[in-house]
Length: 176
Image 1 (tube, one colour):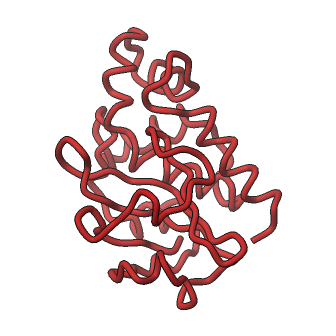
Image 2 (cartoon, rainbow, N blue to C red; image 1 turned 30 degrees about the vertical axis):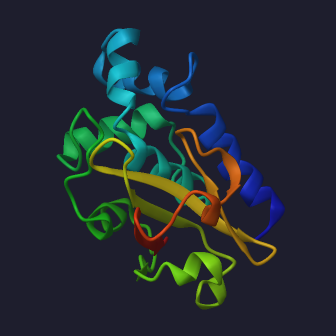
């Protein structure tokens, strides 16, 4: 993976955190649905799937709008709700956007520890069981043979995936 692509992904995730005092994610939600900052912060807590998917598409140069445009479009199409829960298949979303991607899912935790089956030139979305309830989604990539995370929550940018993901919370990895 080219360093500039990783830096771009990390910059998007870093500027769109879900739980910080200031976030472009809040601004995008406000612009898309016309809510207050307080309400945008509440809604952002469940936008992990949306923002991690958006960050990957934007980094790969397959989507060129800002988060508010993406969120507005997804709402208009009925592909998500205001909480950021994606209601459509990601393949349908990509097809509508004219984007070709493999969307290969890997269900083996071993792929985080030893990512030899994974393409080091691709980005990945990771789904884990949330710490409180439900699920959490993050962006990921392989750098120097190590699977790393770029997380809008507390796990951080460039965090080693195996430091945060284990057999109790792992669900899948999806190549995008």
